[in-house]
Figure 1 (cartoon, rainbow, N blue to C red):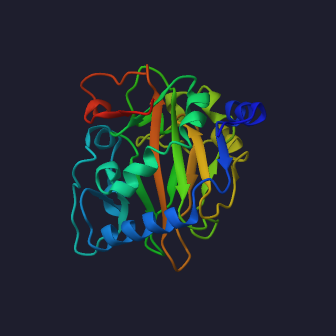
Figure 2: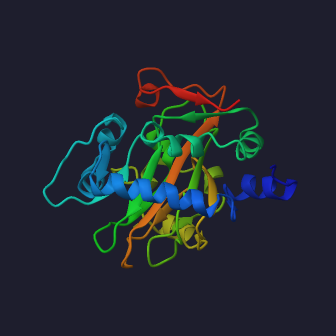
Length: 260
């Protein structure tokens, strides 16, 4: 499968692209069932809501996906980390042959999975989850350039009630100053300049099997889950094969997987 010229142009312009009905429903159910078992038993490594809310910029840069910093008595898991090594089904999805030509088109070269970043089952637990603030993933990563794309798989329906992704189209090409981000590197919604940009936000309700590709510098966020069921999604990131991680940073802590 390959993208049309129109789809490529849309990704270059907006910084994200929706691929409807991309993954099989049976695969989505299998991934979700395995993820639910890991969530139920809190199989490490994980990230909790407590960690996410309290984590500073420095902690985000330092903390490894190999360990959870906090274990609480009343814990709300925000994500399962390092899913590539958790189960063969997760690994097979991340190495999916069908998506490789698409990723190569977008990156302009052969894709390589970055095990160090994303590589997660993301959750929004009902009523106990927190909102995800506006941010650019690239602000927490360390690579020579920004030729990185994330692959988001909806394992069930995602909508405004349970915390669907929101994007600011074209923000991956905007030049922002450091003052437009707060101390945790979130895009501040208290600034008039930022609020004007945020008014251009868009979101699409996702169905099981839908995939969203989005650029590492695209501003995105998600509301908390006010529905009665957890929202569970799968996300991993690929880079162009020549885009090296900067040595002695978190981005070099794990091996990479070439999808040639």
